[in-house]
Length: 258
Image (cartoon, rainbow, N blue to C red):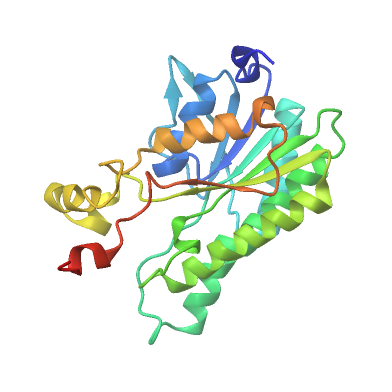
């Protein structure tokens, strides 16, 4: 297959949950640049929608935690665009909280947002894609937190670990019409990075621990999504694409005196 053809999304419809800010905005811009019609959803309209060369994403208000809201979202996407080729399950996150004192209600809300809601999104998408001749692709945005300790976001890390298992199972159940893949970022620089790492000096210090020498930017994640959802990656399903710039330097290397 010609690479340029494989990465051409003209005529394709891509839905990205939480696609108007942070990593989601980078994913939206990447699909827009590839020619796709991009739909983003969130609980409220953003001040600015992702745009590329005058082409803008479409916004539909939806709360991914509510099944009725998701049903309206997918009905509108199908009504407005007539098809759905790719869904990127991006919405999620967690504020920091100590596992020793966090409330059960908080933990349940984090699992609901980061595991149950993506499953509900995927079910709605699959129902549409199974009826299409070309099927479709469902991407889950995972996290490095699923694969290493996640202090202060322990429940989030556990939910993201659940996503890895969920995606591999759905890939078996929904094949061959629908491919299911997880894309797991490491540390990404967004407009909220200062909340996690502090000022520019703090961000630079964190970046120095990564072999690549920097945090990822949202377009790094977006470019990977464009590839993995394309026909060029048609044999990729049930797998996890890990994007962490080489990982995090083991602490013992700094502590050892040998």
